[in-house]
Length: 289
Ligand code: HEC
Ligand code: HEC
Image 1 (cartoon, rainbow, N blue to C red):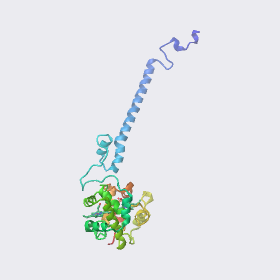
Image 2: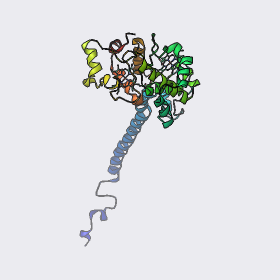
Image 3: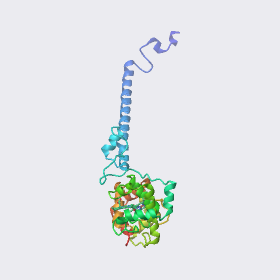
Image 4: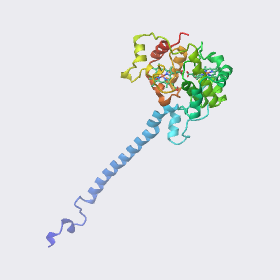
C-alpha cells in the first residue's frame, strides 16, 4: 500500500515542479519579465498619449508642441479658443457658418436697398464700387452669395482673422451680412465680373488646374472652382482674382494661419503644392482687370 502513494507523500518538501529553491529562481525570472513588460507598456502609453498624439493634433489646432503636451497631461485647459489680439492672432480651428432658413431667404432675395446701402457706405471704398477691386483686395463681384456670406460670417466669429475685415464683419448683424453678400453677388450679373476669361498657362500648371495630380492626391482646382460645377456651396470663384491675394491665401492655408476652410480642403491641397506651384497657379488664374 505504501508503495502506491505518490512520491511526495513520503517527501513533503519536494513538489513535482522542483525544490523550493528552484521554484524561487523560476519565480524571480518571471517576476522580472512581468515587471519589464508593465514598465514597457506604461512607457509606450506615455509616449503615445503625451507626445505622439499631441504632436499630431498640434498642427490642426495651431498649438506649440509644449502647449499641446501640457494640454495632454491635463496641466492646461483643453480648448485653444482663447481671445487673441488681432494682427498676430491665429484663427479658430473651424468655420461656424450655418445655413439657416432666414439667412438663405435673404441670400436668395438678391439686390435689396439695404444691401446696396451697406455696400456703398461700408465696402465700396476697399472692394470697389460694384465689388470689382482694382487692387490686391479681393473682388466680390462674380462670387456666389454663399461664398461671400460664408467668409463674412467667418470673420465675424473669428474663424478667419484680418485686421481690416474683422471689425467690419463684427459691426454688422448676420442679416446685414447676408443682405450685403446678396447685393454683391447680384451686382455681378449686371457688370462684367470675374470668372469669365480664357486661361493660358504652362502645361504643368494647366494640368494641376484641370486634372490635378493623382499621384500626390491633389484634385483638379477647377473641379470645384469653375463657376457652377458643383463644388462645395461656399467655393469662391478664383479666376480673375488678384494674383498676390491668391498667393497670400494659399500660403496662409499651407502654414495653417488660415483654417476656416471646411474639412481642411484647401489646407490639405495648399500644403501639397510647392511654393512655386502656388505662384504659377495664382498667375494662371489671376485677373486681367
Ligand atoms: C478697409 C478696407 C475694407 C473694407 C471697408 C471692407 N473690406 Fe472686405 N476685405 C478687405 C481685405 C484687405 C480683404 C482680404 C482679407 C484677408 O486676407 O483675409 C477683404 C476680404 C473680404 C472678403 C473675403 C473675400 C474672399 O474671397 O475670401 C469678403 C467676403 C469681404 N471682404 C467683404 C466685405 C464687405 C461685404 C464689406 C462691407 C460690409 C467689406 N468687405 C469691407 C478690405 C476691406
Ligand atoms: C474640393 C474642392 C476644391 C478644390 C479641388 C480646390 N479648392 Fe480652392 N477652395 C475651395 C473652397 C470650398 C474654398 C473656400 C474655403 C474657405 O471657406 O475658406 C477655396 C478657397 C480657395 C482660395 C481662396 C480664395 C479666396 O477668395 O479667399 C484659393 C486661392 C484657392 N481655393 C485656390 C485653389 C487652387 C489653386 C486649387 C487647385 C490646386 C484649389 N483651390 C482646389 C474648394 C476647392
